[in-house]
Image (cartoon, rainbow, N blue to C red; front, side, top):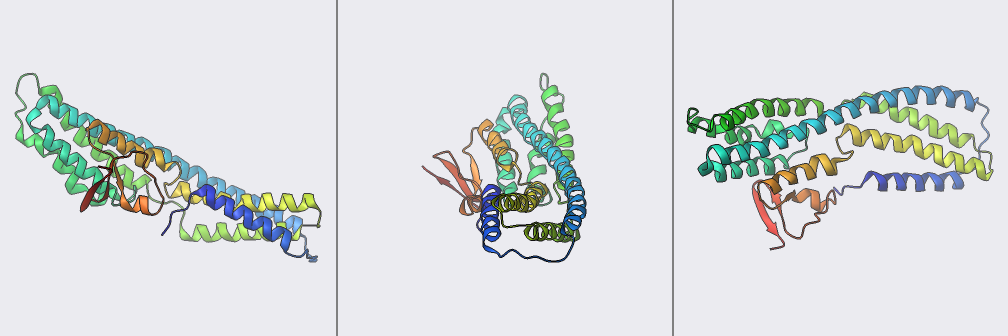
Length: 272
């Protein structure tokens, strides 16, 4: 399925609303449209505001956890280079495999399916001598990183989950439909009325798109769900990796001339 950016969706909705506002006939229905609109708008704004605030809090925490995990992995690699340089290349490969498999799944789901790859990174702890002079600090950091990165992974699976239930979406869509309908019924045929109706009706629907993006961890994902991981590949002196389905659906367009793509089962280099 082709991924459509929220800005494009918003433009399409606004264009459609404008067409409908100017094309549909003016109806005079004997109902108190103003009171219905006011009551519905108040309920809608309270409910929508609550969900956006809750979803944004989760998204903010998710960004922090991703930064903690990726930063920890970079530090683990450099600590291994100090404590066991002969193992550094193997650990780099393990981290690479872990991050590539992460992209097989959405950011809210990957931790469940990458446990094997994650714990394989820290198998090196059983192969090293903790009493070797000058390396205790590096080994201690690697051991500590295994604990706090695991905590971050567990919390990612919790805060990354959607909080808006199907029933809540039904309520929100129903309220937005009533608001749009009432706005259409309030038109009096004047240009000002048509413009105001277009703007308000579009805003009511676009707000739902924003909530969907925030709740689905798509709001600002370019930075925290894609580029953050590329920073790890760069720190490990590896080519960036972008999953094939991101590229095919226009979810992300690589800026580099040379990069890796595909899936964890089949990685290939583009631009060699």
